[in-house]
Length: 400
Image (tube, rainbow, N blue to C red; front, side):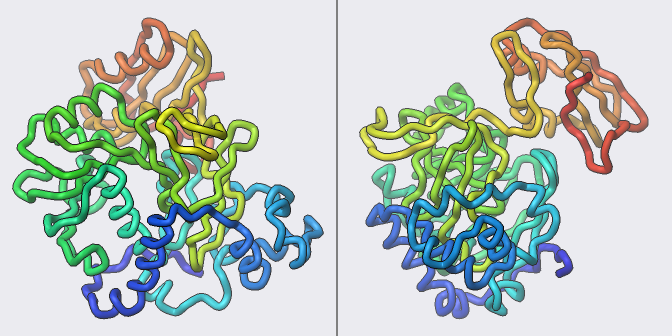
């Protein structure tokens, strides 16, 4: 199967309502009921239709009768990013609905947070997100109105565009660098992009943040500026939404979305709403702790108590290790063509970059000192070429 770029926007509201509408309504009912996650139907579907897991089940000596029991899940080996990097075809349910590829697309992550992987953006998976927006609004005691939904992207990862959302009450959707002049009901984006709301005249009903944890000071500034509650959610491109963060700081799995485990300190998820692209016990590459029982927010059940950063590169600090990827958003804002942050010691770092000369990088120094737990020295090294130990870019390196 050949990877293809995201397609041009297809404006076909009649098709969306007819084909995707029932999928969205089912998701809305699932969220409203707070339905528990049952991975067994996903395992059984994989047994009949997904080559990758047919082989896994055979190797683990798991038959169809075994998969009717929840205990069988723990016997299935964890799926790693390297498995997806090898190819998407074995993870597709066969036969695949024709529109899954005709109206969806095969994507590939950049690799900036680990090994680049392939994923299928089935349109039904996108539809799930619109039901999530209703759920998020209800969480803060609000309801959808006719104002637009705005996705902020201050880093301009993709071109700006707009579209109608027939499955989300027919409102307009905008992807913009800033939200001024749009009067949105919901603003979503990563924390760096949402920072543009501070001091603006935008007054949404809800601000949704993802990609990496939002600093508490930024959250407070956004709330003070917009008057809107800020909710953080945990998601990946390949799984869609996994969990919603509560006021106590824990991430509660979205009802009916994913079965969530933490195995040896690593998040492992089984999405049960992915119709064509099947993942079972998939490790997206995040470190976390998990807890059971009553949360400080009053909710009960299993939850991700804290997300501790990506697994692929860890820097050494005075008080312990920390995820190097936490510096990614700040590095992405630098006016350079390419960068590589190298740790030589807990208090000594080097930023290699290609581009115009940098006089200083005070925000990176400040953030590194906070994470390392000590004053740090950052050397700025302008180079013509950044040497790589592999064929892929390495934005973070621990010097041996």
